[in-house]
Amino acid sequence: MRLFALLLGLAAASFAATAQQLTWNELRLQAQGQTVYFNAWGGDPAVNSYLDWVSDELKRHYDITLKMVRLADAADAVKRIQNEARAGRTQNGSVDLLWVNGENFHTLKRAGLLAQDWAERLPNWRYVDQSKPVREDFSQPVEGAEAPWGSAQLMFIGDSLRTKSLPRSADELLAFAKANPGKVSYPRPPDFTGTAFLEQMLIVLSKDPQALRCAPDPATFAEVTAPLWHYLDRLHPYLWREGKSFPPTPARMDRMLADSELLLSLTFNPAHVDNLIARQQLPKTARAFGFTKGMLGNVHFVAIPANARAGAAAQVVANFLLSPEAQIHKATPSVWGDPSVLDAAKLPAPLNTQLAGLVPASLEPAPFLAEPHAAWVAAIEKAWLQRYGSR
View 1 (cartoon, rainbow, N blue to C red):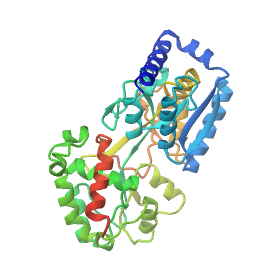
View 2 (view 1 turned 135 degrees about the vertical axis):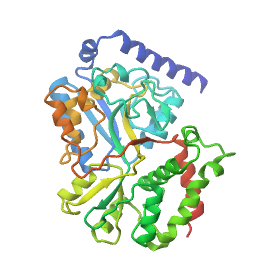
View 3 (view 1 turned 30 degrees about the vertical axis):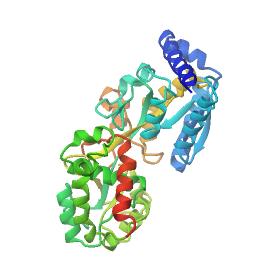
View 4 (view 1 turned 90 degrees about the horizontal axis):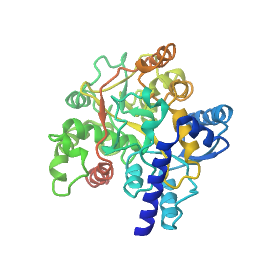
């Protein structure tokens, strides 16, 4: 195993050295005719349609064939990369580009299974909004081992016509739930959005937010998380079904909001409300909003395995995903509505105006709060299930 790790480390170093030696034009020439196997979550028709458009553009303009490997879970590709490493496959791997973030990124990077020091060398990096956490992934340093291509932020959904005063803090949310018993809830963890709600509340309630940037310490876990459980113990009696049951998904909450069963829903895509309004599932008075002190957000990335077969073309694909044209197309609500990672102020006219104009009409922006260390996800899910999951 040590030998495999050494060989993979050498492969990653060789990748970085080659990227530094070649000019971008030389890299593009090397990429021509290559096939990139892009492993990405395939659970959303809008995402799949967007990536089909990307595939067409890459073939037309760069002579790169993009083969989509649609995953139910990115962990499936991670296991495949790990198995190839165990088999000593240091070249010609089955994955050239991977949509990854959080714990999966940390697992691959820690094992030396990713190409490093390439992302910030991409020509389109100059447009990236560096006020977003593009150099860290769930508090883990990226170090050029993955390139950003989209962002997301947890937001509440409410109807400003039905609810005149939307809650803007943890205390206001508790008061809102007390004033409207049975009309508030959150998705049952380990649903992704439900766990994100727990992370959000842990961040804003914590007496030591810096402790969340490291993996949880068993010796201090109870102390660090105590404010969260104390808050939930007070909140749950006023939730839908008195906190004894929870909606299974945010989509279910959206329907409950539309039917007036709930007054609030949750989403991890700020453009989601515009999409619901466009489909006439929510009224035009619906709003995506957050806490005044900020809402949990993250950036999603693409990474290149150290043993990628088409490393040059994978970099060209990552650069195209960061291009103003691709980012504007992706951020268009009718296409996907995935928020851009670019800074509109850095773009030339008229692209800057186009990107700035894609801020969802229903969005009331909130400051960006970076994700805790990836290991907190499993830890707080387990603790939540022990406390509330069996009720």
